Image 1 (cartoon, helix red, strand yellow):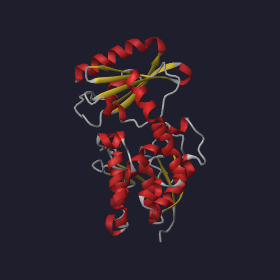
Image 2: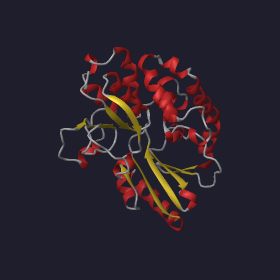
Image 3: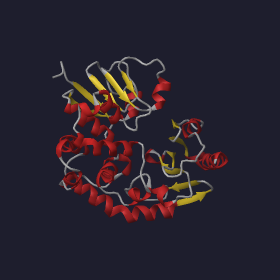
Image 4: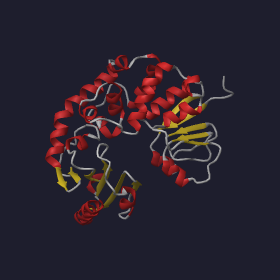
Length: 310
């Protein structure tokens, strides 16, 4: 029995869910708060010595910060004792699992769940898994806010309440039992009802520019829900993508750039490139927002640079 329990602060995604399952199993947490990484960097969330963070930027005040992002080792070169980081780990949940005793602490029944969170967080999917997801893979996609299900329906219970329920479900239910739960099924049905429209929208709005696929969604009334890797399955000849979107109330234009999870040959450092236009990110993904009157020029410059990089 631990001397005291802590609050877990993590992301509202599959990795965050499994971190919560593991830490609850060892009775280390009694409260959970889901946050966006930017909220941590901007100091919006108050962190104390009674908090454990996972998969989030390091904050010195926390009891423990558990992570697997290599960029955090660059940002915090002097590692403090409360910073548990393994950049070789495929997920933050795997760092938690190892740090607290691995197989000696956690049930072997959870091995499949651990393999799936590793696969999901490092995006080690096949094209078939992206196009026709089932089981853990599908659960990961419907929980990812970037899939966009929340834009279309007020579900019976909120994503927060579903996450809290899933922490208990994942403890002793099989993935088939989890996928049959009414609140999961409600989201799965919506995901598949959008599938054809989502793919048709990608094909309608995408243009191939050398090794880049550019998806301009500014003329679309609705952006259908779907997983963020499908564009790479539909355009396997491209190793990088840019989504062009309206910013808040069409006040500016957003360029969101990412690398293919299938063809990993892109030489562009996306974070560095986005930084030139006031944005940021890391080597494999990033965004920038520019005034609408600059959008056409910036788009041309991004295409040229990405094509030059190859």
